[in-house]
Length: 294
Image (cartoon, rainbow, N blue to C red):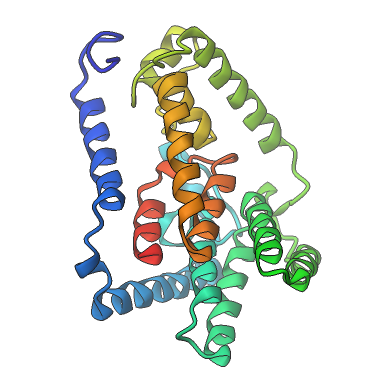
Protein backbone atom coordinates (compact mmCIF):
# COMPACT_ATOMS: atom_id res chain seq x y z
CA UNK A 1 0.00 0.00 0.00
CA UNK A 2 2.57 2.56 1.13
CA UNK A 3 4.83 1.68 -1.78
CA UNK A 4 2.29 3.35 -4.08
CA UNK A 5 0.12 5.74 -2.10
CA UNK A 6 2.06 7.05 0.87
CA UNK A 7 5.04 8.58 -0.93
CA UNK A 8 6.17 8.93 -4.52
CA UNK A 9 7.09 5.64 -6.18
CA UNK A 10 10.63 4.48 -5.43
CA UNK A 11 12.37 1.79 -7.45
CA UNK A 12 15.01 1.50 -4.73
CA UNK A 13 12.38 0.71 -2.09
CA UNK A 14 10.73 -1.80 -4.41
CA UNK A 15 14.03 -3.61 -5.00
CA UNK A 16 14.77 -3.74 -1.26
CA UNK A 17 11.29 -5.18 -0.69
CA UNK A 18 11.93 -7.73 -3.43
CA UNK A 19 15.22 -8.74 -1.79
CA UNK A 20 13.52 -9.22 1.58
CA UNK A 21 10.75 -11.26 -0.07
CA UNK A 22 13.33 -13.55 -1.66
CA UNK A 23 15.07 -14.08 1.69
CA UNK A 24 11.79 -14.86 3.45
CA UNK A 25 10.75 -17.25 0.66
CA UNK A 26 13.78 -19.42 1.43
CA UNK A 27 12.32 -20.07 4.89
CA UNK A 28 8.78 -20.66 3.60
CA UNK A 29 9.96 -22.92 0.75
CA UNK A 30 13.44 -24.01 1.90
CA UNK A 31 15.71 -25.53 -0.77
CA UNK A 32 16.49 -28.37 1.61
CA UNK A 33 17.99 -30.67 -1.00
CA UNK A 34 20.69 -28.10 -1.65
CA UNK A 35 21.17 -26.69 1.84
CA UNK A 36 21.28 -30.10 3.52
CA UNK A 37 23.88 -31.32 1.06
CA UNK A 38 26.96 -32.31 3.09
CA UNK A 39 29.32 -30.48 0.77
CA UNK A 40 27.28 -27.28 1.00
CA UNK A 41 27.05 -27.48 4.79
CA UNK A 42 30.77 -28.18 5.07
CA UNK A 43 31.55 -25.23 2.78
CA UNK A 44 29.48 -22.86 4.93
CA UNK A 45 31.04 -24.31 8.08
CA UNK A 46 34.54 -23.68 6.71
CA UNK A 47 33.50 -20.21 5.55
CA UNK A 48 32.51 -19.21 9.08
CA UNK A 49 35.74 -20.63 10.51
CA UNK A 50 37.79 -18.78 7.89
CA UNK A 51 35.86 -15.62 8.68
CA UNK A 52 36.75 -15.97 12.35
CA UNK A 53 40.38 -16.44 11.35
CA UNK A 54 40.37 -13.28 9.23
CA UNK A 55 38.70 -11.45 12.11
CA UNK A 56 41.63 -12.28 14.37
CA UNK A 57 44.02 -11.01 11.69
CA UNK A 58 42.02 -7.79 11.51
CA UNK A 59 42.00 -7.38 15.30
CA UNK A 60 45.75 -7.86 15.76
CA UNK A 61 47.10 -6.27 12.55
CA UNK A 62 44.45 -3.68 11.63
CA UNK A 63 42.69 -2.65 14.87
CA UNK A 64 42.12 0.94 13.73
CA UNK A 65 39.25 1.41 11.27
CA UNK A 66 38.62 5.06 12.15
CA UNK A 67 39.68 5.90 8.59
CA UNK A 68 36.13 4.98 7.54
CA UNK A 69 34.82 7.94 9.50
CA UNK A 70 35.63 10.08 6.46
CA UNK A 71 33.12 7.93 4.54
CA UNK A 72 30.55 8.47 7.32
CA UNK A 73 30.78 4.93 8.67
CA UNK A 74 31.16 4.13 12.37
CA UNK A 75 34.80 4.51 13.47
CA UNK A 76 35.89 1.40 15.39
CA UNK A 77 39.14 1.27 17.32
CA UNK A 78 40.70 -1.82 18.94
CA UNK A 79 37.59 -3.92 18.34
CA UNK A 80 37.11 -7.09 16.32
CA UNK A 81 34.95 -6.08 13.35
CA UNK A 82 35.79 -8.91 10.94
CA UNK A 83 35.09 -8.89 7.24
CA UNK A 84 31.60 -7.50 7.93
CA UNK A 85 33.26 -4.30 9.23
CA UNK A 86 30.82 -4.12 12.14
CA UNK A 87 31.44 -5.55 15.63
CA UNK A 88 27.77 -5.94 16.55
CA UNK A 89 26.67 -7.93 13.49
CA UNK A 90 29.91 -9.91 13.41
CA UNK A 91 29.46 -10.94 17.04
CA UNK A 92 25.86 -12.04 16.43
CA UNK A 93 26.82 -14.22 13.45
CA UNK A 94 29.53 -15.84 15.56
CA UNK A 95 27.04 -16.35 18.38
CA UNK A 96 24.67 -18.14 15.99
CA UNK A 97 27.58 -20.36 14.98
CA UNK A 98 28.42 -20.99 18.65
CA UNK A 99 24.82 -22.06 19.32
CA UNK A 100 25.00 -24.38 16.31
CA UNK A 101 28.20 -25.95 17.64
CA UNK A 102 26.71 -26.45 21.11
CA UNK A 103 23.71 -28.38 19.78
CA UNK A 104 25.61 -30.29 17.06
CA UNK A 105 25.49 -33.93 18.14
CA UNK A 106 27.70 -35.08 15.25
CA UNK A 107 30.76 -33.38 16.76
CA UNK A 108 32.81 -34.87 19.59
CA UNK A 109 33.20 -32.89 22.82
CA UNK A 110 36.87 -32.26 22.03
CA UNK A 111 36.02 -30.90 18.59
CA UNK A 112 33.27 -28.73 20.05
CA UNK A 113 35.63 -27.29 22.64
CA UNK A 114 38.31 -26.70 20.00
CA UNK A 115 35.84 -24.70 17.88
CA UNK A 116 33.81 -22.98 20.60
CA UNK A 117 36.80 -21.40 22.39
CA UNK A 118 38.06 -19.27 19.44
CA UNK A 119 34.48 -18.45 18.48
CA UNK A 120 33.66 -17.14 21.95
CA UNK A 121 36.94 -15.21 22.16
CA UNK A 122 36.09 -13.53 18.87
CA UNK A 123 32.70 -12.54 20.28
CA UNK A 124 34.36 -11.11 23.39
CA UNK A 125 36.90 -9.07 21.41
CA UNK A 126 34.06 -7.39 19.54
CA UNK A 127 33.12 -5.67 22.84
CA UNK A 128 29.48 -6.05 21.79
CA UNK A 129 27.36 -5.68 24.92
CA UNK A 130 24.16 -6.54 23.06
CA UNK A 131 25.66 -9.88 22.01
CA UNK A 132 26.78 -10.61 25.58
CA UNK A 133 23.24 -9.97 26.81
CA UNK A 134 21.88 -12.16 24.03
CA UNK A 135 24.21 -14.98 25.05
CA UNK A 136 22.91 -14.72 28.61
CA UNK A 137 19.30 -14.85 27.38
CA UNK A 138 19.99 -17.90 25.21
CA UNK A 139 21.86 -19.72 28.00
CA UNK A 140 19.03 -18.98 30.44
CA UNK A 141 16.44 -20.38 28.03
CA UNK A 142 18.58 -23.45 27.29
CA UNK A 143 19.10 -24.08 31.01
CA UNK A 144 15.37 -23.95 31.60
CA UNK A 145 14.50 -26.24 28.69
CA UNK A 146 17.19 -28.82 29.48
CA UNK A 147 16.76 -28.40 33.25
CA UNK A 148 20.50 -27.82 33.58
CA UNK A 149 21.03 -24.65 35.58
CA UNK A 150 24.80 -24.95 35.39
CA UNK A 151 24.70 -23.87 31.72
CA UNK A 152 23.45 -20.40 32.66
CA UNK A 153 25.73 -20.15 35.71
CA UNK A 154 28.75 -21.11 33.61
CA UNK A 155 27.81 -18.57 30.91
CA UNK A 156 27.32 -15.82 33.49
CA UNK A 157 30.67 -16.50 35.16
CA UNK A 158 32.42 -16.73 31.78
CA UNK A 159 31.02 -13.38 30.65
CA UNK A 160 31.92 -11.70 33.96
CA UNK A 161 35.48 -13.01 33.71
CA UNK A 162 35.65 -11.83 30.10
CA UNK A 163 34.51 -8.34 31.07
CA UNK A 164 37.27 -8.19 33.69
CA UNK A 165 40.06 -9.58 31.50
CA UNK A 166 39.25 -7.85 28.20
CA UNK A 167 42.00 -5.35 27.26
CA UNK A 168 41.15 -1.77 28.26
CA UNK A 169 42.72 -0.05 25.28
CA UNK A 170 42.34 3.36 23.67
CA UNK A 171 38.93 4.20 22.28
CA UNK A 172 35.43 4.53 23.67
CA UNK A 173 34.34 1.31 21.95
CA UNK A 174 36.36 -0.80 24.38
CA UNK A 175 34.83 0.97 27.38
CA UNK A 176 32.02 -1.38 28.36
CA UNK A 177 30.65 1.24 30.76
CA UNK A 178 30.15 3.80 28.00
CA UNK A 179 26.81 5.60 28.09
CA UNK A 180 27.00 7.67 24.90
CA UNK A 181 25.75 4.82 22.72
CA UNK A 182 22.96 4.03 25.19
CA UNK A 183 21.73 7.63 25.09
CA UNK A 184 21.99 7.63 21.29
CA UNK A 185 19.86 4.48 21.09
CA UNK A 186 17.25 5.97 23.42
CA UNK A 187 16.95 9.01 21.13
CA UNK A 188 16.75 6.67 18.15
CA UNK A 189 13.94 4.66 19.76
CA UNK A 190 12.06 7.86 20.58
CA UNK A 191 12.23 8.90 16.93
CA UNK A 192 10.90 5.50 15.85
CA UNK A 193 7.96 5.70 18.27
CA UNK A 194 7.19 9.23 17.10
CA UNK A 195 7.07 8.10 13.45
CA UNK A 196 4.98 5.06 14.37
CA UNK A 197 2.38 7.29 16.05
CA UNK A 198 2.07 9.25 12.80
CA UNK A 199 1.19 6.13 10.76
CA UNK A 200 0.20 3.46 13.32
CA UNK A 201 -2.02 1.19 11.23
CA UNK A 202 -0.24 0.66 7.90
CA UNK A 203 3.11 2.25 8.63
CA UNK A 204 5.28 4.34 6.33
CA UNK A 205 6.20 1.54 3.91
CA UNK A 206 9.23 -0.71 3.63
CA UNK A 207 12.41 1.34 3.05
CA UNK A 208 10.42 4.60 3.03
CA UNK A 209 11.78 5.62 6.42
CA UNK A 210 14.24 8.12 4.84
CA UNK A 211 11.28 10.10 3.47
CA UNK A 212 9.45 9.84 6.79
CA UNK A 213 12.56 10.99 8.66
CA UNK A 214 12.94 13.96 6.33
CA UNK A 215 9.41 15.10 7.10
CA UNK A 216 10.13 14.93 10.84
CA UNK A 217 13.63 16.45 10.63
CA UNK A 218 15.25 13.18 11.74
CA UNK A 219 17.08 12.65 8.47
CA UNK A 220 20.89 12.78 8.60
CA UNK A 221 22.31 13.33 5.09
CA UNK A 222 25.71 11.84 5.93
CA UNK A 223 24.37 8.78 7.72
CA UNK A 224 24.11 5.30 6.18
CA UNK A 225 21.33 4.24 8.56
CA UNK A 226 18.44 6.44 7.48
CA UNK A 227 16.51 3.41 6.19
CA UNK A 228 16.25 1.80 9.62
CA UNK A 229 16.36 2.28 13.37
CA UNK A 230 18.62 0.71 15.99
CA UNK A 231 16.11 -2.08 16.47
CA UNK A 232 14.67 -4.41 13.84
CA UNK A 233 11.41 -4.63 15.76
CA UNK A 234 10.96 -0.85 15.73
CA UNK A 235 12.02 -0.72 12.07
CA UNK A 236 9.40 -3.31 11.13
CA UNK A 237 6.74 -1.69 13.33
CA UNK A 238 7.33 1.78 11.87
CA UNK A 239 7.60 0.52 8.29
CA UNK A 240 4.67 -1.89 8.17
CA UNK A 241 2.34 -0.62 10.88
CA UNK A 242 0.53 -2.38 13.69
CA UNK A 243 -1.46 -4.75 11.45
CA UNK A 244 1.51 -6.29 9.65
CA UNK A 245 3.68 -6.19 12.76
CA UNK A 246 1.07 -8.19 14.69
CA UNK A 247 0.93 -10.80 11.92
CA UNK A 248 4.73 -10.89 11.94
CA UNK A 249 4.84 -11.60 15.69
CA UNK A 250 2.14 -14.28 15.39
CA UNK A 251 4.15 -16.02 12.65
CA UNK A 252 7.33 -15.91 14.75
CA UNK A 253 5.58 -17.30 17.85
CA UNK A 254 3.95 -20.07 15.81
CA UNK A 255 7.27 -21.02 14.21
CA UNK A 256 9.03 -20.84 17.57
CA UNK A 257 6.64 -23.33 19.17
CA UNK A 258 7.07 -25.92 16.43
CA UNK A 259 10.84 -26.00 15.95
CA UNK A 260 13.71 -27.87 17.58
CA UNK A 261 15.67 -26.48 20.51
CA UNK A 262 18.50 -25.49 18.15
CA UNK A 263 16.18 -23.44 15.96
CA UNK A 264 14.44 -21.93 18.98
CA UNK A 265 17.75 -20.70 20.34
CA UNK A 266 18.79 -19.31 16.96
CA UNK A 267 15.48 -17.44 16.67
CA UNK A 268 15.69 -16.25 20.27
CA UNK A 269 19.23 -14.95 19.76
CA UNK A 270 18.23 -12.91 16.71
CA UNK A 271 15.04 -11.65 18.37
CA UNK A 272 16.82 -10.45 21.53
CA UNK A 273 19.70 -8.96 19.56
CA UNK A 274 17.19 -7.13 17.36
CA UNK A 275 16.11 -5.10 20.37
CA UNK A 276 19.48 -3.33 20.18
CA UNK A 277 20.40 -3.47 16.47
CA UNK A 278 18.81 -3.97 13.07
CA UNK A 279 19.95 -7.59 13.15
CA UNK A 280 16.79 -9.29 11.95
CA UNK A 281 16.99 -7.50 8.59
CA UNK A 282 20.76 -7.83 8.11
CA UNK A 283 21.28 -10.05 5.02
CA UNK A 284 24.25 -12.01 6.39
CA UNK A 285 22.35 -12.81 9.59
CA UNK A 286 19.44 -14.12 7.50
CA UNK A 287 21.79 -16.21 5.34
CA UNK A 288 23.57 -17.60 8.42
CA UNK A 289 20.24 -18.54 9.98
CA UNK A 290 19.17 -20.27 6.78
CA UNK A 291 22.26 -22.51 6.69
CA UNK A 292 22.51 -23.17 10.42
CA UNK A 293 18.84 -24.00 10.98
CA UNK A 294 18.21 -26.37 8.05
